Image (cartoon, rainbow, N blue to C red):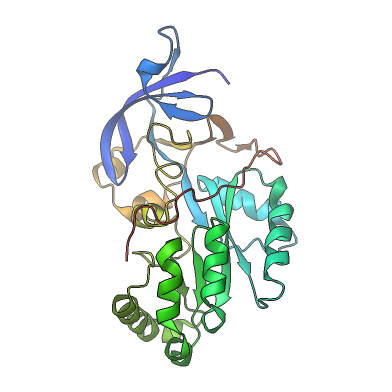
Length: 292
């Protein structure tokens, strides 16, 4: 893949507007000094640039979906360059088989992906925590259905299992009516037992900068930094938007061009979602940027 340079005054990186002067080589970001002087410059003046978005498939789950390609295109349309897909696990006995099978099923993905196990809280034990840490999953999703599951969980054991693995445990609450009270109790338990979790709730929006770093996904994905994957989105310039770069504006913005590891995968209405181009991505150091 041919190298090129990007030089712009309008980039939104880690929630801040700043100038950007970097090069793309072999699908990675690098300093412009690391490429030849004759390397072409990519002119993006009509656009502003932001990192590729990382979603978790809470809104459109891929597991057991009959039309995965159609669902995946919905995420790509929004500027997603890596998708974290949930794997519901109901049996510890079948856990390892299901994990390996689902990863094989996803080998045709057109964008990069990670797999996160989703397990009822009362089923999570130290063995499960250590297993998914060894698998370099980004986090374990704990399904919290009621107060009783919070009370019967052996938190001391989970904290010990996390001691060497660093993998976060993140809650989801299937019942919106009880979420507020259960989340309050969850937060108290996290502090009391020193359990590693993520700073922000999981939802249908792209993962927050805090979550990306706490999980160890960034700086290699979801950011614009040297040595990271050259995943980015180009958006039509709109002065009103640029003057007010709040989180919701960024999350809802629809890009004009989406690039994955230096390759254009979407340009306006045209999709170049080549099956199998996506890579299964792992956490190299689980929760390297620790957040409790």
